[in-house]
Image (cartoon, rainbow, N blue to C red; front, side, top):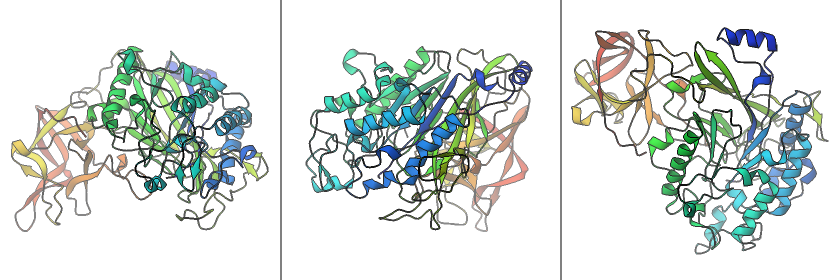
Length: 574
């Protein structure tokens, strides 16, 4: 895929006095001045208007220099100048102006960030994550099939759609380290010096010692050709390359250890592409939020403006923000994200809310958008005018609340916070379920030829499940518990039901749709009510039979089953 880039910014919360008063009552966060983190994030950003002629041939590389690409920078400027946002860092999650690590494009992007953000984000607080067009500006994409025995090379040299040798790995890396000097201050977790990770390919970020957040920049770049140059170090192999899955797992393991050593409690994973790379689900499931680009669209796994408590989470919450400027007609908006970490108190426990807010800088003014195709433009050659915004020559641009997705809030204990008392007995564990003396498993569906419905099975065939919740209010001991069931097999789907109320495994965590959005959405999960009166009871399901006496589990809010939880030892591999 070919892509361009994006950013993110800030907002305000209201009266400081009101905020402090409500914080003392344990109801609301401190006011915006108390934000611990204030961070922009984006992916697949294009060129700014001043650098519109940089590396825009051959076709289709000019797609990252349309009006939508320019709008990202000017919308960010509006966010700073007109809306008073005060971000202190920016994360670009791959495809940084499609420059292949060239000095020309890297330095132009550095300049653009300082110009349009008015110096609000220091030059050493802009952090790139590597995408396919950051390895070579053509993306190490399917054109490389013409030279099957050669690597994809760093830089911009090419013949037609095939990369040519231009520079060493060391020179390519130096171009990144010089243009983005903050890379020299990142964390490189490793137990042994000879296993040291290398920025900008894999690294960790601790943006503030007061923060509870640990950022993990991994390497799933989205390349077609995963072998680069002839001098790429072994620890710099893409996660989808030979041995890369094991490498990415080791990096995640080192990163989690480093974050916990720093007393962090929230882990944000950033990779340019979303892919099934590291196969160890016990590591993947410790990622609280996973931010990606590569697909030139926008999507989030949670409903807009929803909240999720860390204690309820099982799957990483996902944000796709690949609509930063490369116009393939997959989205009618150009967007960036804005992350704020706000501390508050819930009773005696110190907690934080991470606000992930999505802003649009271009809403297409084309009649046929979105429309996928091979030539263009399709969506972002024209943007709707936003009166009062920043006009760099193409019309006024503003940062406006996301038209399709506006973000969500993640609620978690603050680093080093004392544990709170809540009804946690069923969460964070893997179980085998016996419902009314029948073990729960997957098997043939009663009204179709599928084999992913919930049916009674022998104990040895029972499928392990993990409970997860929704929302941010933690139930206290003795309260009713609402929870969904995450099935612990290689699909990693949760329980949902069809039009005939037959309960089945829904889409898996790794399953994409045509646009690269995830098919798994948390709002599609069935929630059940669990109560304990001597024995555990589960409301919302009933055993039923079809006309052939085939038994299956049906969704039925009026019914209740006695349920036994038996601890399970389950494989942690995806």
